[in-house]
Length: 241
Image 1 (cartoon, rainbow, N blue to C red):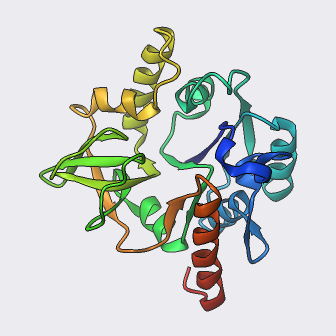
Image 2 (tube, rainbow, N blue to C red; image 1 turned 45 degrees about the vertical axis):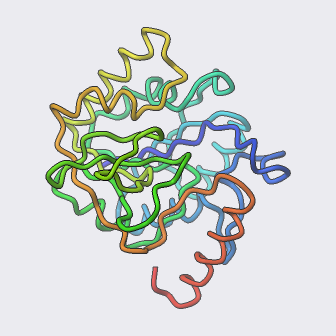
Image 3 (cartoon, rainbow, N blue to C red; image 1 turned 180 degrees about the vertical axis):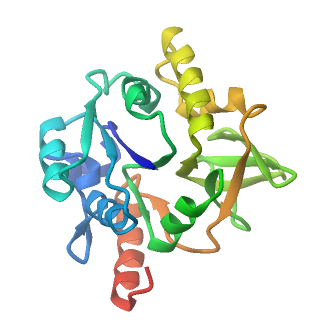
């Protein structure tokens, strides 16, 4: 099992928080940044083969990651300002031929979520049932208990909110990387990687992993940072992560 953490974004909505370092190095309290917490959970779970994509402040991020996990490998996306993370995954593709735990670099999640993703028998994605569908964030369309589409513009009664926390079986990862390569070779580097994933769901069986209110959320802006940091610190304080 390998982990892939996507950190090539610019983080423009974070204001001063991303003036001197990437978003993943933002403090969330209790002595942690987003990335230090992710790496701590991965090490506890025995996942030390970690690939981190980088964009702005690449050397700063590489130094920071290596201090916390010597085995972490960074893949730089020099076109981070003009591409989406689909291109970062394309650049890292040769390192990703394995079962993959994929996390966005701005995602804060609690321990049990990561443990359940790792224990999933096949491909899975974190979802939250019973909440209003987010306007600008990811949703998953389900059919007979399986995921059939994931995207920002996916809506409908059969849809649920989803988070960018995936466990991808090796065979499915190989198919996804092939689809990503097709997109990038066509110059569609501004697409979401999920756009490529959606083209192969007839070959991929992915199950939804219910969050049931547990913390697994992205930090997109300063409002998110305040709210998620409060939740994270409360979890740490009660040792229920």
